[in-house]
Amino acid sequence: SQQGEEDPQALSIQEGENATMNCSYKTSINNLQWYRQNSGRGLVHLILIRSNEREKHSGRLRVTLDTSKKSSSLLITASRAADTASYFCATDGNQGGKLIFGQGTELSVKP
Amino acid sequence: EAGVTQFPSHSVIEKGQTVTLRCDPISGHDNLYWYRRVMGKEIKFLLHFVKESKQDESGMPNNRFLAERTGGTYSTLKVQPAELEDSGVYFCASSQVRHEQYFGPGTRLTVT
Image (cartoon, rainbow over the protein chains, first blue to last red):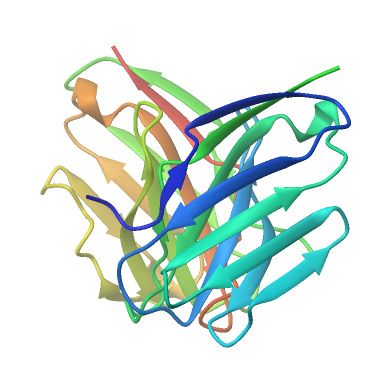
């Protein structure tokens, strides 16, 4: 199976609620990144967490990393309709720079 | 500073035809990557250039795909002949340092 597997595959919440997405990977990594793709648009880099970090915040985003479990989570607090998008985690491993993406979580935030 | 740009934004071609996608990286970025997302599946790595050299092309699906980066600036990805399963979104990314990749808006390819 692929690295960077995510769950849930789809998540539907009401505006104002929190959204949590999880990602698992298989190999050792230097860092893990989260990206967002709005429908029909490009990938937007959200946050990068290094392998020696356990938690990172950026605005309404909170990312955790557990290298012992090879997993990460992305929490979006106080969600907005504009947060509706696909969210991907990506790991680099020691792959020479290329990113390994998960299948993504489709987040739908209803107003 | 301009971001990564890709052209065209959308291409519709018939099976058997040829399509060339273009990517202009951020100026000064030596690393250029191609990825694609097929049929709502995960985003998969295709290849990596460092300047004009192919550093890693392990993700190229078959010899119908040809990527070039003459002069180490923009890159092209040619699909010849296109097949139905090539439909998807093709992303280009560039970086200066190894891990901070900036993505373009993607080219949506539809093969009918």
